[in-house]
Image (tube, rainbow, N blue to C red; front, top):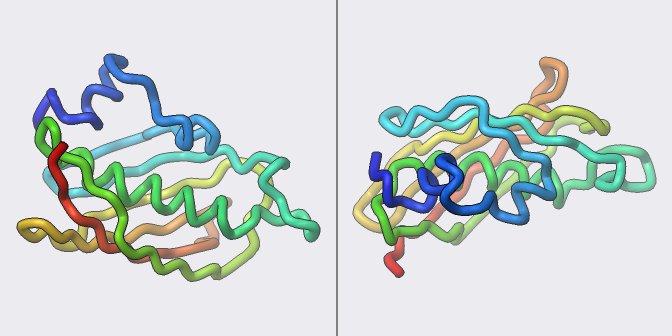
Length: 139
């Protein structure tokens, strides 16, 4: 854990939470950088719904990206960031407005390419899962 990394600077309040995370109402519940696991909750706002009243898939995809990416970011050094290269999402059940829980995992971290997985659940039902590939870059 590098205290100069962006993730930890945000957690310490030295940098602001990213606007996307604020929009999604993200709250980090637990992070284990050694295991590469992050748990978070999101606010599935009524403004995120489609005509059927379910949370639109793009918002669920953003929530998944915001669980997996920070799981990896918690392991990075100062000056490193990890943009997502590929995101594959599966929608398994409708998500309604309300709290949505996310878990992101670093499945494998190579020298420059990392493989991630994540899932979202609501009231005990998994509503979406994802896998992603990210690349570690330096500023």
